[in-house]
Image (cartoon, rainbow, N blue to C red; front, side):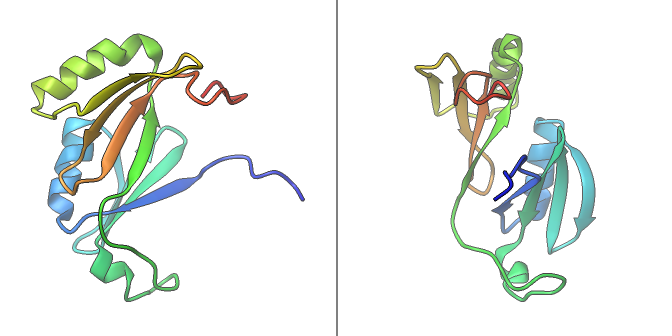
Length: 135
């Protein structure tokens, strides 16, 4: 079986897409790729895409089979190690509470916080998983 090489997109769910846009575009600086009001908003994350869906709408189906869930999820965004302090200050300046900071055994570090929908967001530095890509 050939290897899977890359995570192309990951999805989370939010009932209020305007709050998600303000958080991910406004506070974290992600570029909006597409926005279908009341259904979804997609953001560029480096060479990947973060999909933010309204759960009720994605359960209806459409282009893809119905999918979705309820409740908060989790994902991690990779940041340069040298930017960790800047991101900590930036989050604090935007009133985003850091729930936990972790120094991982392999050398990576994490800043953990939540988006307006309650999703657990994590900034991670290289070394966290010991992957060949550095992450």
